[in-house]
Image (cartoon, rainbow, N blue to C red; front, side, top):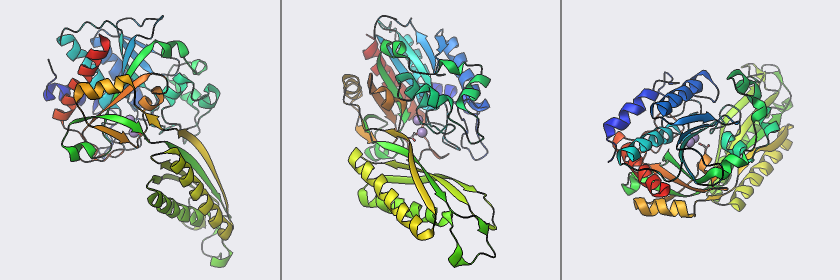
Length: 404
Ligand code: GLV
Ligand code: MN
Ligand code: MN
């Protein structure tokens, strides 16, 4: 028994209108109205399938087929996230959730009676698009982020995570590590849209992840002297925007030199007026590399160049890591089983995932579904219904083997 592309499309379409923007992109920040509606959609779909739904202290949703065994690590867990980056694509996250629900259907239709409990999970704030720290739900679960720090993370409007969760009816005092829950999980499998074109180049619909590049987010603060744009002589300026602009170019150059990736995709400027030299600018650097030594070298090189330039501009510069993720290897029995079962190509990725966080604690595998545009975190992200259906079948095959 396998899922038809039409059947995939029917469930997929039911989620598509939620949080869709005029540009075709999605704005589904965690705990926003749109993300809450996605959660509601998930709970309804899970209940329709007679799954037992619960929400953990960190706001992650779990839908159980079979009772979680409190005394063993027998549970097989699959899923992803429903939040998005600003104006992101439809597939990043939701494809893994929709595929997990459909995989449950496929297993039932195949007559599989899992010998182990199986859960579909939705992790919260995977993108870090609202509160700045990616994979926040899985990091809290595993203890990688301290609950006090998490409660006080703020969105652009200054609202704390604690307030946003309380407004959604959750108790932020329950945030924090959940070793008992984690101990019940024997394997985690996350299916995800591919965020590059490797599968398309290989002519294959589904792949398996080998590793996640180490990566980090760094806050760059540039401070100068706010002043009048018309009356301040060019030689008298201490313009932090110049230091920022130079730093962006330097980051790009250093990343190219080192075969790594560096991006500045978010800036705040104060006072943000056309006719004023800014007093302050804040930028966020996203840096990624194939190994940790290269990543460290890249960030240090960018820091050095920005400091030198700040000296010349008469501005001040600081760099602070907001979140870092070490290299993740998926070299474990579950991932090897997935690669064997699907006879799929094995690919590394530069994108972060909850699977990367879980991999430090539990045997974890990732499946990728072909994305012919190669574009992600933008509206053009795409996978065909035929490939998505192949992804569901592949996921069901892997889960069937694991649940035995
Ligand atoms: C998650 O999508 C990331 O930023 O890698
Ligand atoms: Mn993403
Ligand atoms: Mn994702």
